[in-house]
Length: 200
Image: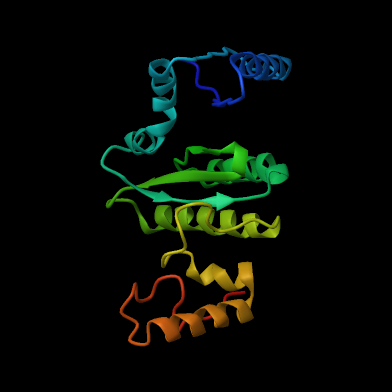
């Protein structure tokens, strides 16, 4: 079986004719750029079947390393930079010799690399995964993107907030956090951390 990048498109419009025109134009563009098979579905059942491939990509990624858990990256870049950042990230995954499928939401510049990790992985392998994530975030910020497109900052990305928003903005966030949560009982240590050092 030949594995190739796959692009899913969803069209909406005021009429079936306008949607059909959009789909035909997309089909022509894909063919012009060397795209292969073009499948088009209009019924709800057919659409769900096609989209199921996209909606199960996380689990398909983990299946590449049975028993693994996923380090999920979540970057959002200007659409004009999406191909460049995704290409550089794919090259990074290859150079680090790890498993890391890439997929995303091309329409809003949001994409993910799933980095399956096993409990038995060496410290070196885990370090390579973390380097990919770090470079992905820095690459994203360098083109004016965000370290998170939909999954939030949590504790894993909070050290990047000063790079994305600046020290002053993070200080304002901390001030608001202190005002609303003086006992630090609401998600302590997530997003804004009192002891968070700025990174360079």
